[in-house]
Length: 87
Image 1 (cartoon, rainbow, N blue to C red):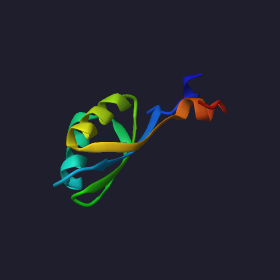
Image 2: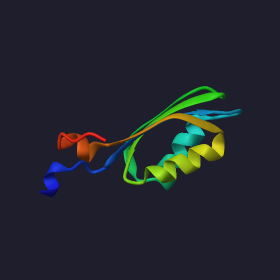
Image 3: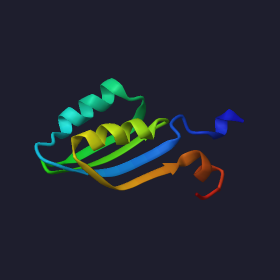
Image 4: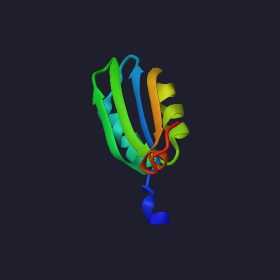
């Protein structure tokens, strides 16, 4: 049964708006402090788009909120999607 599930359950996406943002610093922080995969952190010093697969999306949101204003937040449960369930 466990073979049906993805290793990282939550597809977490958001935008960070702030000042002096650095995608390399953010990427390094993710790699050092979070467990997950498919990390995308792209943008400039005022707007960064984050995409990340993890089992602890609340930690990602907490960290990103410490950098600036976060919005367009989407956290999708990929296990539910893979079973054909919505919501």
